Length: 359
Image 1 (tube, rainbow, N blue to C red):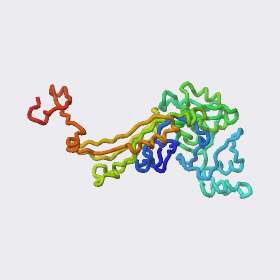
Image 2 (image 1 turned 90 degrees about the horizontal axis):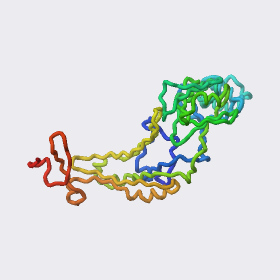
Image 3 (image 1 turned 90 degrees about the vertical axis):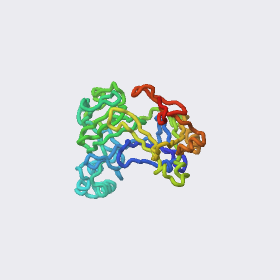
């Protein structure tokens, strides 16, 4: 998304289209263009952190909770004391209150006091052959949804989907990884992980060959793919609503133009992204609205500079019938009918259906 002060910022993860609290920016708040690019690897910023929950099933901000860094024995890198504080029950504030300050780290006590119900998700397989297919859920891009039974963890019923990224489930014990397309539910009822593998041929038995009982699973972004310098891009130059600023009475452009965008697939089988420029214009009979925009293709690294040079060329205007005729920028087109209720057409003519001679 282009910025008013210059340059553009990556929207990651891409918000779900139509979700509550979504960003719907006005064109005037942007730099005048929006970029679409091939997926690329940004190793400095592509760090995936497992989500946090409050026990209700909702995903919440993690606050001061440290990232989960599993060890091979299934515990996290912050140590046994931290594990006890976070896992003694749904309310870690109460759990921490049973421990002395000497027995619990300062960071753990701080978390217990400031976020008494928030826990970070931990993925550990409950048994051998813990993965099964989930036939009652829809396929996505021809891929069957898989269900993995976990050791009890915080309940998070939301999922994760980013069309530009591939996730990796890595067995911490063996280092073997499984590419994942999206997450349907992180932990339904705190023990059920539902996910779509990246490849159509991956089945439950393949997952069971990778993960055994008690194996910790780390989640990361795949680092395979093009670099940002190699990525191809498409720019949609929509302008900054310049016409609205210049119209004195502003009756025809009744509100600020805006952009709505987001991941349209969500938990559905389809995979698509929605992008639309909304111009709230009032067009009366006989009037014509014109908006001239541009599409540019180039390498992503060149797009900000090239797109910005075309923003000033974007134009939007409402023409009345009189303006079109007097300025000779248009021509009248009459509708006619050759056979009643069967055939219709149009042509430039001096005689139309609204005149006396209409046969």
